[in-house]
Image (cartoon, rainbow, N blue to C red; front, side):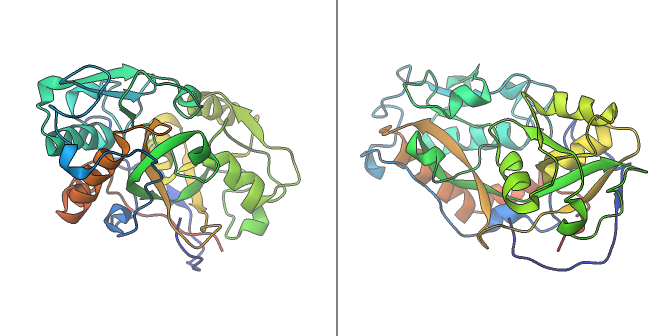
Length: 298
């Protein structure tokens, strides 16, 4: 997330044009992935020199297995097909593989529920890409690569709701809000907004969207690119109320998830760092995530 800033009292209406299949939902105009911070939390011991298909101890020798959830949503993926290379996270997965020397044909995608990916224990994937924010609590259970995307949380509602015109976090405190279980979106509700009504928790963003459609909740909190997708493709008369400021002053980052202590963690971080340094992450973000921006809540 970004530092606290005050913006004009605006509500972003829906109607954004999707590009690149279901992708094209927006992130901030300036790609946050271009930030220079690195948040690797891995405890593996591989050296950079051992990062090759011949030496990496992957789940299948000579292959790279990447996990993600089912369904895999845009703009992170295209039409629930991670293997097609379309959508930001699909493209990043293949870019990491290429950087490490794996051909696209050597990459396999498997489906892993979000909560299973971040819980302790052995993994069937080499790494998982599923909009998982790096956090100290999660890093006790799994390894993270360096961050491959900087993200803000955003509040989504519908035109005419009691929070549609909110300009400050204080104006959200009386709202009934919801988010997917186990996410930093939910934490943003409880730790930053601190509403008077107990937040609603859902197993998926789709269920949260349905609750918003039926007006069981006043708004939901999701990451910003997902907010653009929800308001553009899933809701009628949806609006983004605004972005939440960072709770810590440091950007929240998505990182690839690996088993705790994985020997692959240094290799994946090395690849992510290289993709950031050579501009690949910026290029991919501009291709799949760039949008119209959204007001920030003070």
